[in-house]
Amino acid sequence: MIRSIRRLSFVVLIMFLALLANITYVQYFQAADVRARAGNSRVIFEEYSRQRGPILLGSTAIASSIPTNDQLKYLRQYSNGPLYAPATGYYSIVYGATGIERTENAVLSGSDDRFFVDRVQQLFAGRGVKGGAVRLTLDPAAQKAAYDGLAGRTGAVVAIDPRTGAILALASSPSFDPNVLSSHNPSQIRKAYDAYSADARQPLLNRPLAMTLPPGSTFKLVTAAAALESGKYTSASVVPGPAAIKLPNSTRELRNWTGSACGPNDKTTLSNALAVSCNTAFASIGMALGQDALRAQAEKFGFNNSFEVPLRAAQSVFPSDLDPAQTAMAAIGQFDVTATALQMAMVGAGIGDNGQVMNPYLVAQTLSPELEVLSNAEPTAFSQAMTPANSAELLAMMVAVVDQGTGSNAKIPGVVVGGKTGTAQTAPGRPPHAWFVGVAPADVPGQAQVAVAVVLQNGGGAAEVSGNKLAAPIAKAVMEAVLGR
Image (cartoon, rainbow, N blue to C red):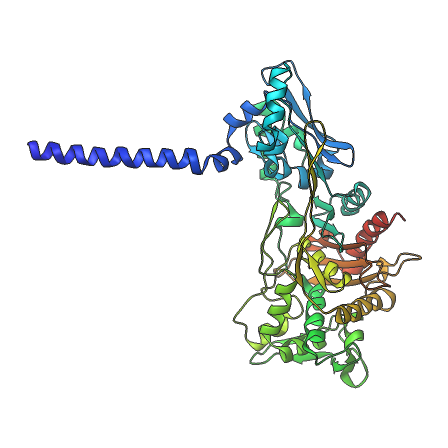
């Protein structure tokens, strides 16, 4: 009996020590993670006792907190909520915070360690503790052009400054209104959230960062880059371009979208193959280069890597263990190749910036409650994806796509524009996705001011789907906005 009691006491002691260790670990090592969790309403209530700082574009607040007379002292409000929702996210007493509201919560809530002196001074002065501010990189005109261009159709737009990686536009459609999720009425919040969640078009999905789709013929930019970087091809190289090719070890035949050859005698140049989006040429080039070369080039542009801007982006994928037929399809952005709009904008940006791919970012500055600068974004390079000479050659090929090929709807009077159209097949019976990647100005290598990627999922519901018809006009409008046209 005594032995049993001792054993029981020992087990209880071990369980107590395990519980103590777990509590200690959570309190001291996971405290920051626990506070940052989206569903931690206790922390949200605590933070509602102080004025949350604004999210700014320039000097204009797109998210701010106003005083109330109810139990929660401040109400979060969003100017043009659906327009900026992919960036701001929401701040909810029921569902916590998302977007910049979550990633920059320490600054916005005033709990950042850098505000300790400010908090003490505010308390001694009898003033309420206030949060700091976050200034974003978004260009208001470009953001509006992107959102208006999508016009409620399911899709995404990302624009990047190739020189720095600053995100100039981050548009998602359909979007949601963060105001209704950030009210002080829990029942209304739940009702709105349930309605958004039940919507088959997924308005809560951050499509520019989280939606991965086959990039279709826009991926031919990556294949062209791999060809030039191999040293075996130039823009003038003659490549196969028949109307159709039989894929190796397969009964399947790959055809050009036009149904015809891409040049006389089933031959064409690499430059013309990009201009007319020749499937058979790029499939043949992909097989000649091999899957390893394609994958290595894709990874230099960012595929198979993770990015936080600081919102986490889904990983774009170039697959492994491909047979020759799969390599051929991957070379034209099909098979299991998937990409976000952010990733394809990075491809265009790298080509437009002498082959250098910059890490994308959305936060330009963090500021104190008195709007004094705490930190400035410091642009950093992700990789040198191409030599400057090869990127200049590929940029010139992109200009030919717009001037002489499939991307004519991206032309801007007085501006040299480079681009690449794309359509990507999906499930049988579903319309293809429509893509466009654009760079401007594209006349001087390394001087591009904007790279943009547009995708309309399943063609945005259009009966006739093409990247030039549907996506290129949106890219044009965004580029014009950035360039002040």
